Length: 588
Image (cartoon, rainbow, N blue to C red; front, side, top):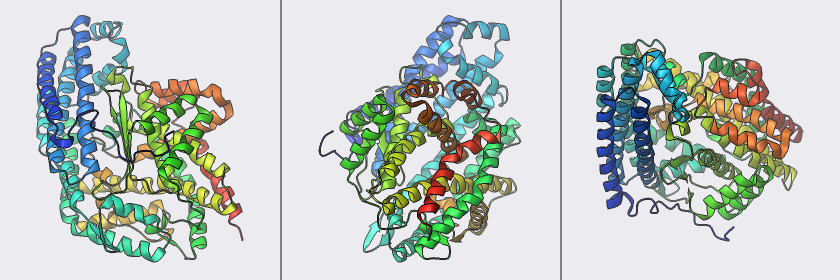
């Protein structure tokens, strides 16, 4: 590994010149023409295997190019939230995604009209088989939607309505600054400061954080109310009676599986409350506050450099899989990762694919603590997941968000477990265990609070617009329920500060995280039992994530029934083991 890694990513290898790139603009213009041509072909598509094979081959290339352009523009927006040209390009990308949705609607129309015997013949064709699952899935879903003309109209109207609300939210976030210690912090920079060991500073920052979001709450509430209103009206016209129908379909997951998972989560509340109470005691306070989640429990939370983090991650990945380790090494050396701490970066972190180039890029701001190391490992897990699927047709690479969190959380577990084992002192081990239990708290309590809020919000929104005080109250109650009233201070404006609520491409952008956390915990336990022999099985599981329901994935690769709470309860064992060790080490 190089002794000094570059902390900024390389985007110019795709399109040189950033948001002003002539090559990127030409690429987008050509893609717009290609999408129009595909729509025309789909509208008059014949009913032979040759017709379908030709369309699927050309569409596959277009989908990869749309992914490429979309990822580039999103990366440009993330690295500089004030890049106005990137926002303009994002508007064109949103239009392209809408055009692609129209293409799918036209394809689904042709599929739904085809007699069953003819359709089965086409699916059996060797050229179609690699995407048969996705096409069959679309035929089934098409039967539950409006007629084609109305679906196309809804898609067109969404471009400057529904999706524009997502863009509005991003624009608002881009102009927010939080004044703190003589600096005007971006929301990304400010969020990293909540790990400061000084509680008074965290409290001061949280007050200013809430004030900053409160100043923009009116516009943000407008976005949330009308984004939800669009969804509810669309669902009503489709005859859907549940707001969970679309997210469950998108995650290839049944209501029974979701119910079983949340039942297990409810059963874990008492134990997670025990952790929060013990952390509060170690901090010398009666109860934790919202701004204490990322606070260190002691002074043993060692700071590490980016180079040290990279070396450690590669070393630990190699204990499970040489392939995963080599992949991580390449990502570090080839500048696939953006970690620099600088102004005007977007908050949070993500991994995105460049399907045509068969590469990935990772975005985050590295804080130098154990949580930052875990985040890098997490995002590298996402990237590896994509990498082992790049040879498949694009439709078969389209795995759902819930299983997307499988590889990422699995990779994170490898690295964090190693850090705990190799802790240099009791204090350091306590700190690392606390970090991992903090992650468990996020998945089992914070994510749950978001789900509870969103469920109740849609119930209320069906009756009319909600005011800012009403949104605050809904969020406050959801947090109290999910955290079992174990906190001193909550975050009522969380509905405004969490961008996931505004992602038009992913309604209910919450429960898939908890699914991925528990599902990957089960996979991790299996990997520890089977050792190196599990690597090949693991890769095959990842490759099937875009061409199976999650229930089938569980049955085929793990021999488990995801509709039963006992599987999900078994996934809690990693957190319970951490908790037991943490309580023992911190006992008086």
